[in-house]
Amino acid sequence: MRDIFITGGTGYIGTRLIRALQKEGGFRIKAVARKGSEQNLPAACEVIPGNALFADSYQRHIPPGSTFVHLVGVAHPSPSKKEQFKNIDLVSIQQAVRAAKLAGVSHFVYVSVSQYPSNIMKEYQMVRAEGERLLQQSGISCSFVRPWYVLGPGHWWPLVLIPFYAIFSLIPAFKEKLKQQGLVTIQQMIDTLIFAIKNKPTGQPQIYQVPDIKNISYVNIDLSPVL
Image 1 (cartoon, one colour):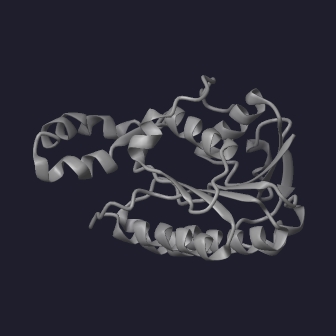
Image 2 (image 1 turned 90 degrees about the horizontal axis):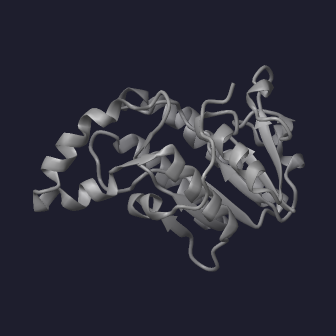
């Protein structure tokens, strides 16, 4: 059995990842949940009462040698939420790195964001890049998953942009940008996260860019909304 510790497990990606890991089997899963949100975690997951913004609230529950998966982030990121990125996304990864290092985790999987330059989401990218930097400095083996926008239930609006993606992809100057900032599905994200969890890197961090996320097909699971 492999120990998995998750922050952000009650969220959009987290609940689906936990269910997928449970279906896969071979994992003992602990997930942090604030008071009142415990019911959002799938059954058979060990609930760790705590707050992802305060490492001391959960650090003692992290199994040594475990894989730490950090999924905390502001819902529906947009340029108007730059202060929330600093107060939630950045603080939570700072606390997670501290807790993971003290606990002696063996592998840290971090959902970051595409680092291809974007003026629209520059602040968001900077916060996530800082999270990656902190992890690299920690000495912990790391995997960084870098989506741009994740399509799924309640998150379908970018589908209207697909014709524009198709048109601009024909222009050489935009080709790489569209490749690195393409749309991925929740299924592809879950597949990539499970693949990352099961494939601890040696040496430099393993980075999964948008093209990598699209190409990994690991499991087929029910991704219907958690009731």
